[in-house]
Image (tube, rainbow, N blue to C red; front, side, top):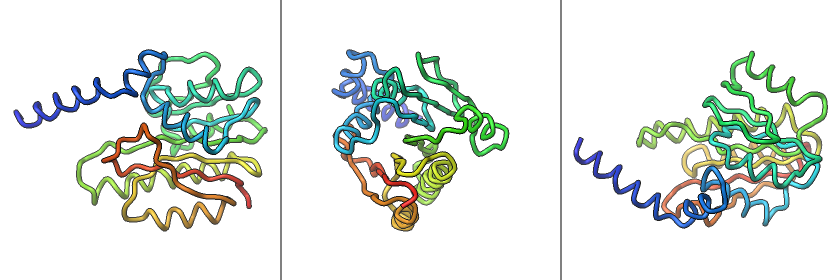
Length: 207
């Protein structure tokens, strides 16, 4: 127990010293993760004014904040998470597990008949520390994001999803390439170097 408390304290010290955590506090963002999306969008120009963006696993809301800034007054941001999320101006939030039919129906009804332009997913499983358990769970979440993207994106749409490198990664990339014209990975500077996380960036849906 003492070892666990010690590692928790060390994590908190590192977290509070993190320059992206400090920058997020200074600039009014809900999480350091917003800088990952900002960098990806600077490189790939996926989210533009007037677009409709669907943000999966949105809590606490950092990516939704960035999306609202990028789509502007003429765009829409729809967000969903199992966890509650404090309300954000210009974000339509659906709480619940979108793998459940009732929640999926609410989400699709909120989206309406117009297709989504960009699907975002920063979803990650609750980590057990066991790679053999955590890796399949993380791959499954990306598969869920791909599946919902296939139901909601219009032609030429884009997907950005967190994914962990390891078993199942290559087959996941192959699946994405079968649905999108261009598929690559990004490792934003705000992603901690020791983390196996990268971001799958797929564009040209329906190609």
